[in-house]
Image 1 (tube, rainbow, N blue to C red):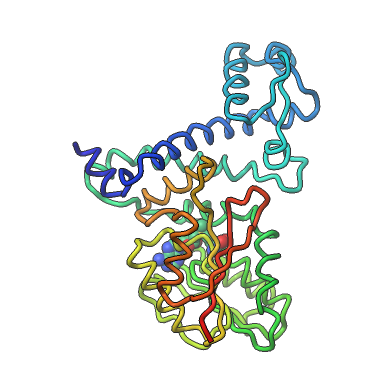
Image 2 (cartoon, rainbow, N blue to C red):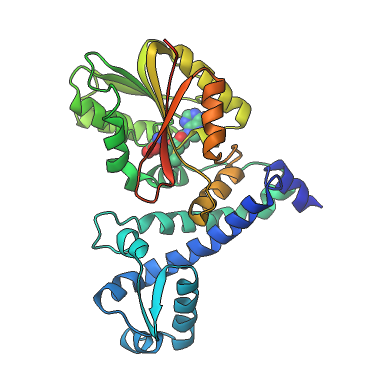
Length: 333
Ligand SMILES: C[S@@+](CC[C@H](N)C(=O)[O-])C[C@H]1O[C@@H](n2cnc3c(N)ncnc32)[C@H](O)[C@@H]1O
């Protein structure tokens, strides 16, 4: 009964398909992480091979390798022709270290984070408390989306970030990557970041100083739910952060962001969307444990932005699988 109460509290029983997606995403992630740790994807780039040959060449347990490869093929992570396994386009692009799009550290980082969450889960469930994130974990979470940086920046550069005296606010700025990169590209751009983790704020302010941008950028330590956001911004960024808030807080933040923007200002919300695809299911699960509303389907996030006064909302794909999107909102003139 307690388990069901907890699941209900974390809104996990609202949609049974989401629960199944999460569970499946979880298993897939553990599988990917083991393959990354053992170097299986990298090794198969060199020579596709059968599990027996693989176990002999790399001195591994034949039964375990055989099981891993079979399950890997059933998840669509490997191709199987006869008895020979090789990478798919997905694993070759994202999980092999030779690829410039490799994000193999991301699933591995998230998986190790999961073990910490699992250790705490019974205690949290007993005490009905949300997970309190540590500074180390906060850094890992903020680092988790680094693989998106170049693609996401390409999208941001299509917004009016080059305008004279452009003023940018980045809510939940994490490591401050976007503020710094935008300020390097526009010498008159100024920006403020807001970040809940003190250790991250210190790190970003150090980086800002190291880049000589301290006259134009700064990061405020505080909770976006309460902090005064200021006014007259041209751009408001909320990158991979809105889903950590409960829905009513997310709506309130959007309302305050709208007030802080100039009338022709733009909001850009970066986040993965829940599709039938299980790949981001695990992200959703982690967020729910942290206590936020989790990932919304595309149409729901568009409606949320429209409800808070961003009348025109468009979406832009960030990375090739189409799971991470920018939701770009503008106000009616
Ligand atoms: C997944 S990270 C993304 C960081 C950065 N925006 C990026 O995309 O690289 C989410 C960040 O939001 C911050 N955050 C979460 N809730 C927040 C809140 N209520 N107020 C301010 N920052 C918050 C977290 O500390 C974390 O650094």
